[in-house]
Amino acid sequence: TEWNPPHATAGSVSGKPIRSGSYRETYESIPGGTRLVRSMSMELGPAMGLVWLILGWLLRRRWNAATRNIKVLLESEHR
Image (tube, rainbow, N blue to C red; front, side, top):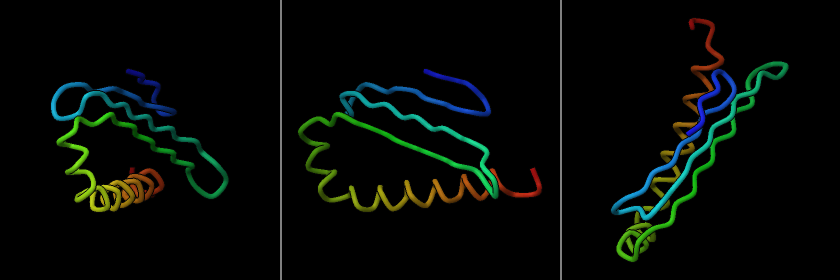
């Protein structure tokens, strides 16, 4: 786990149905906005591997939408 506001956060998860996983987010103020980098990796069990084939595209879409929403909130004038 990493907690370094306002620059980075990170964590890990383990247990069913995900064998292990980790995520990391970094935030950097740049001219005209914020550079936001989000990443996640997961080791899936056999059953989740099959589910990922079916639902992976939806989860990636939601991840990308969440990233855009976070960026909008970070750059909003009403913090």
